[in-house]
Length: 448
Ligand code: HEM
Image 1 (cartoon, rainbow, N blue to C red):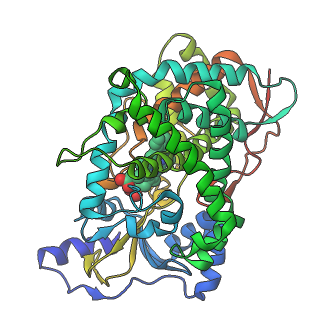
Image 2: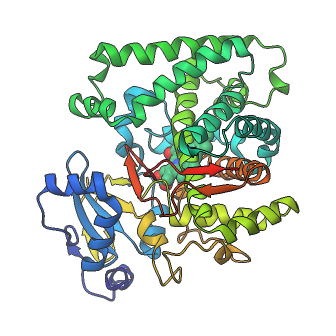
Image 3: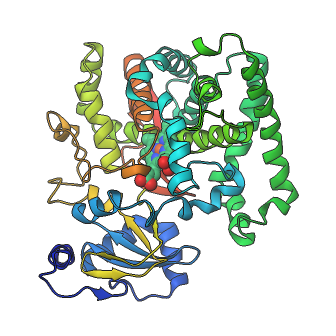
């Protein structure tokens, strides 16, 4: 923590002057660092933390320099920092050709806050009850269709559940005839954001020219046509005010000047919610089952409490899963000007990256950090800067309440309906899929 201590004194003007430039980090070539980062991010972060302390630099080919932060005090300074200086949207430009220029994920400052305000109401905690019944119905139907007695990969099935939940609660499409083509087109679209073979060309030609690739354009246009039809129908719907899906709420939402959202804005945000909320939640659910099946006594306790309609252990299990197996290992903010942090004057253009993985494995915050212990969160709610699976500040995940509610629904239905064992008792290691860290064997289990 020496670097952090320096920052505090120098901010007060009593300590040494900040060092200009980046903190030390691995000296390997940028290409080598990028290769290790993309295959073994967690190992790379842990090694660097052990060598250089809680603030170090790494070099990623297409991202530039990242200053990794593994100290909650430094993370707090970033999450509470001025959004004009700490840009998150700028770090997500690779998603712009896919999600569109209005996407809350790719914007910064005033434009970002404008879109975020429009999106917040449907994601408030108390709104979740409205989605609960639909989520339960979808989870129960899906789980009942799973085979028993044979090894079965849960991750693709969790993806099917999270996609169905988004189609019904976000898009508000229930009609079987319209649902199938939409489901198909959305699945194909999601491939653009999770398949490294597809993402690579986007990286190579850059976000501004990727639309020149016909195969890419065709995929986006197909999904756009279907969404345009849904938006047009919803604008005409007579029961708009009674409807509870997110699309209907966006049709009724107003900018600060009283104007409605354009079709293009709605389209961009719907696809943003799909991309941000689908794979992430499915991965977190897969990890929850991967961990629980390696700890049968905890799975049994969870089942007993769920059958008693108790939620405390369920909530703690979800929190512990997201601590020990966070779906995303870091979040990025690009500096628009030089910033003093942790004893350094970091240059404009550098990325600062609160490190979810390292904060969650800090033994000073979580004793025995590598153990799966949901008990640690019973009567001990997670801290704002020490439990950060959803990032933080004005960019904190908009769907955090939605995701945790959805996880609770699915886990409840699953443990209530099935006995579950691991297909292989050895723990599954992590595997990097584009952005998310998933269980290597897709959370393979045997259901009984
Ligand atoms: C377990 C599941 C999920 C995880 C682990 C997760 C994680 C994250 C993280 C780490 C960020 C970046 C935060 C930051 O930069 O500080 C984020 C942003 C975001 N997430 Fe999630 N997310 C999940 C589910 C969802 C769901 C279900 C939705 C919506 C349906 C959603 C919508 C968003 C949006 C819109 C943003 C951008 C917020 C902004 O830039 O203002 N996420 N999420």
